[in-house]
Length: 166
Image (spheres, rainbow, N blue to C red):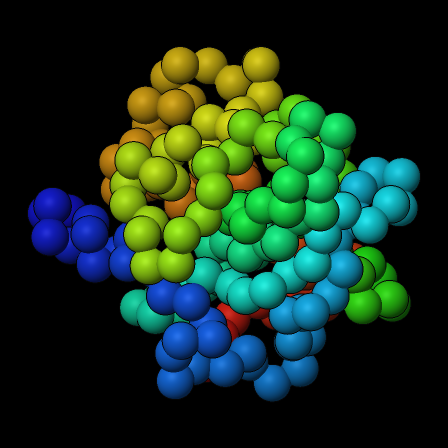
């Protein structure tokens, strides 16, 4: 894959700023509460970032409420594979994501997602057990093959066969 093809593959668009819409049968999660492992509300989904070529959602855009490690509201990106839809309620959960990780995620500015920014986001959520080789593999054209972008994890409890925009 050439550098130009890689850039096209990684070009992300906010759903709210596109002519695309959520595929039939998939939930419109903008406005849904985001909750932690304990069921406490920590924020709200404001948008989704997706790749128009692959029609795959890559990130949830989240407005977070003040956290213990952050005294202000923050808008961040959460890789789609780190979140889960509640099986029946209109809520998004972040199982296993810590307040420390959320505080480490760089602030999101609309239309300013670069490869370096995405690596920074991924690094904020990286487990201590992830190896350096794992990080190096996912800097290239296989970036979205990282488990943090596994959309099956996101939709699994509610819609096992869904997850595309049209």
